[in-house]
View 1 (cartoon, rainbow, N blue to C red):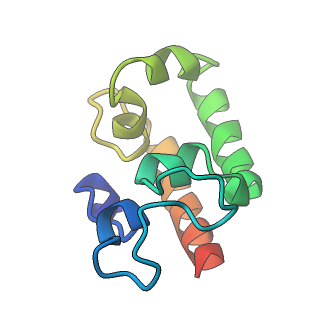
View 2 (view 1 turned 135 degrees about the vertical axis):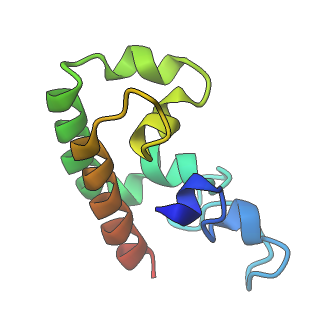
Length: 107
């Protein structure tokens, strides 16, 4: 979680200069999208199954107010990683689980 909070997770957007493929793009489904932390957590179709569990908890804990929160710049990711003052620790713990599952699947 620390690596995500300080934007140091080894996704291609960050490591492209020294990674084997020398690319910033997500290699999971080759759609020409940069692999960022936000992409991995919120968009990449490879992690749809893992993301569903995360989103179920978010909607349950946030009473379906998640979409409005995401519209605000950086607020969505800040909330998920526990940097938002109104963060919900159940959501943060579920986010940790998601990251472990997604990272293991990525390897």
